[in-house]
Amino acid sequence: MESSVIKLDDVTINQSQNNVVLSDVSLVIKNAEFVYLIGKTGSGKSSILKTLYGELKLSNGSGKVVGFDLKTLKRKQIPLLRRKIGIVFQDFQLLMDRSVLENLIFVLKATGNKKKSKNKERALEVLRLVGLEEKAKSMPFLLSGGEQQRVAIARSLLNNPDLILADEPTGNLDPETSKEIMTLLKSVSKENGTAVLMATHDLSMVKEFPARVLGVQEGKLLEL
Image (cartoon, rainbow, N blue to C red; front, side, top):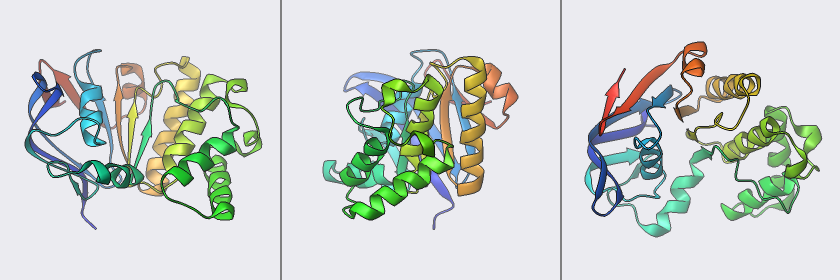
């Protein structure tokens, strides 16, 4: 197994074909490492994450994520890449028309896991990990914001990813709930050996839960 989950070399990050957001981006993140990505809103944090999970195409430089070459990545390989990456969004992105358990089973099916009994077992397992097994049959809209984000973290763990990309995961939560989510992410990283790259502008969390910090400033990615 490679020792790094992310390796970018001299990469240009574009929002669209002619809109360069960041240039000369070089970055290595090792297995099981927890790393913050900080910067103002609109500085390009989300664009970096989108490039890493195949939403934005890599135009310049070279990049490897969980063993996939971003330069030669074909559209049909993107689902395979995303099977090895867990993604956690600020706004949870849960399906409100089905239960928590059905949300998770839906993702397992969509990523090619066909065995019904195995899928249910795995979904309950990740809910146990985030302390929400008793909410399996609940509808997401009946849960608090913190509980919905726990479900989103459970979802990101379904396929035993090598890497979790978290985009402002505490952005919609109150300070107390944010701490719970941070504690959960840190423990998931430690216990599962999963690397985490977390974009945030919440500097109080960075202070309280110290880890390596990368900053996006004036079109560059800097080690802080």
